[in-house]
Amino acid sequence: MDSRFLKAYSDPSKIRILGKTLYPWCLKYRVWLTAFDSPLVKGGIVGPEDLLFAVNVCSESPVGRFNPIERWRLLRLATNPPEYQRQLKLFADYTLVSHWPKFWQNDKKTSSNGKGVPWPLSVVSNLIANGIEEKRAWEMPECQAIWMNSAFAINKGADLNVLSTEEEEMLDGLEKAGTFKPVANPAKVEPEPDGPRSDS
Image 1 (cartoon, helix red, strand yellow):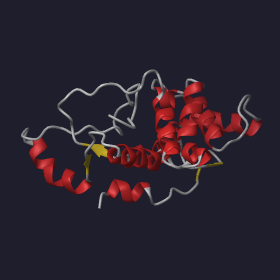
Image 2 (cartoon, one colour):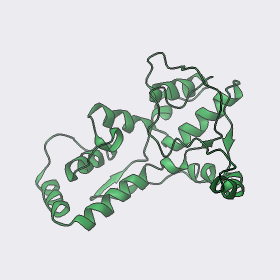
Image 3 (tube, one colour):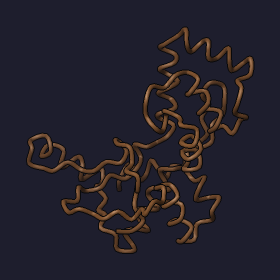
Image 4 (cartoon, one colour):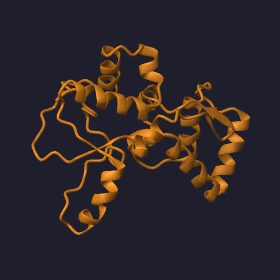
């Protein structure tokens, strides 16, 4: 069975970063950080303030002015680059984007389903349409939401084919030799504006 799936559904536990306990990374936090133009989700240079702000969002701590303890933590990060890099990696690992499904590359062009709908909302809407409670759809670990959205889409006839980790291991040698077409991996690229589609 696909190890990415198994890891995604080993329900992520809470994690502590910069002295705060973070809830599992979910679509709600992705949208909140996008609304605040966080480089952690939108790309760009990430500073210690960006990291601490994201930690506050994901721990559901008050956001705004940093308190004295937070300012002390920022000073420590600014004067200790290895520690800052360690904390930044902890946050990157916390998002579990590497547990998203991979898909076989589809040669044919697919039409956009977005019609202006942001992809996180498209995923949440598809989950709700399939019986998931709205709060759970927004707050379930994002990797689980993407797996479930993909399964619902495939059940509705979407032209998606998940590449299992077993298949990936078998075909890795062929890919390196240039005889196998690379797979689409949403974990390695910023999702397209339409994001993981709920239909084809």
